[in-house]
Image (cartoon, rainbow, N blue to C red):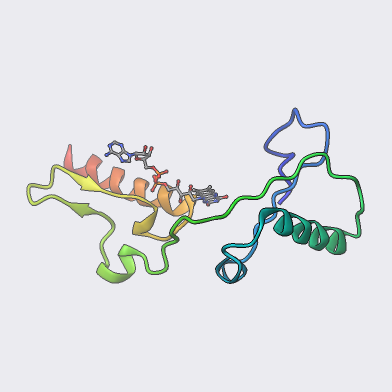
Length: 117
Ligand SMILES: Cc1cc2nc3c(=O)[nH]c(=O)nc-3n(C[C@H](O)[C@H](O)[C@H](O)COP(=O)(O)OP(=O)(O)OC[C@H]3O[C@@H](n4cnc5c(N)ncnc54)[C@H](O)[C@@H]3O)c2cc1C
């Protein structure tokens, strides 16, 4: 993904390459320099570009990703306390992305709004 759209002040091209979950799983302990060389080679091959890189940095993704959402399992859109005064929400309610977090928060906020009328 090209990042220049996020950071207008960048004067050079800035890219983020995400490896697949499968690649990460199979190469979890790969040496970072080796990974950077490999990522660079994929990038060069894919875009047929051979510009000199001014900065490259890799990191491992070790965060969990929701495979089965809470909604899929329970058909519910939040977790509530018995007295219906405390609620739990988050991306995990609907999925794994920012838009899931937004949608889940919106659903709960609409419900709380109805409660407070
Ligand atoms: C490195 C990274 C890159 C990502 N990139 C993308 C992307 O490109 N596109 C995309 O769609 N999604 C992306 N995601 C996923 C996205 O960030 C999450 O889906 C989203 O932020 C989840 O929102 P949330 O509100 O459920 O949880 P969070 O954003 O984690 O918010 C939880 C909040 O609760 C607070 N908190 C935790 N415990 C307590 C406590 N005990 N008391 C008070 N506050 C507490 C935390 O400080 C935090 O502010 C990325 C995630 C990571 C980690």
